[in-house]
Length: 309
Image (cartoon, rainbow, N blue to C red; front, side, top):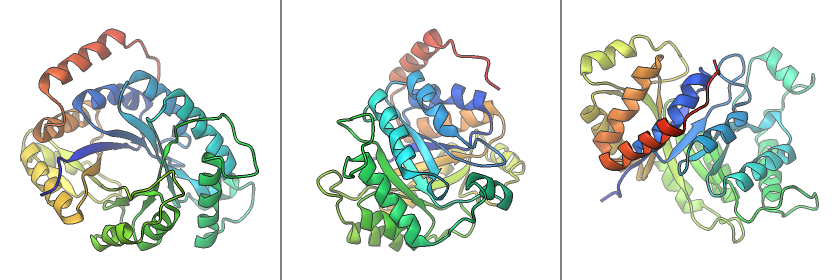
């Protein structure tokens, strides 16, 4: 029998105002994580700048990236940034890393005119540098000094990224909504079987799956909202009422043997997205009604952030 399911949130950051308004409410609903996606050309190219704002507006929920497109950046700079975030918000910061790309002109600009290397070995090398910098296992001095560490997650859609995570002793998040992803539970089974601990820092395998969808009060409303979805790279796995979505999520939990699923709601409007997350949280009993009401009241009394668009 699987343990109680935890839910995290993925946000493509298409509206800064929506992101800032959502995060405290997502925490009040009882979600485990709030992850921000990096996208160039649409969404936000540097969502890591929002992490301290969201972490400051919340108390418990983990906040992080899903993820940093590491092929474009210096592992040292990424490590320094996330060590600072960890110092400010200990045991609440997640660092997701991925191999995603951008259009050719943006890619060339990000790399100062160089051609991007797609070599998997180079990616593995950059990940190794990154975790060594984070944990102080390098001759290069990184700052600030920290006593806890961000959770590092490798994001992937198939066996290659999974193998990187397992062999580097890192957590692995497997997407089931990216077009071309592998819907194959053996990926996580092999991850657990081949996981190699990273020294004394990360001793046990840690994994989840990520899905996309819509939850609404009625089936008709859910499918009406689905018709507005226009991103051909994002496949919808979970669409329906709260009970229908719950059954689909629990079936995926059982099939993949995970205790956490990251949910990416694709609703365009803030109220539809908020309602979707609220319905799922209530159906899965992520938190008690009294605790949720108390947290929402605290947020309402403390919220003074405004002016973003």
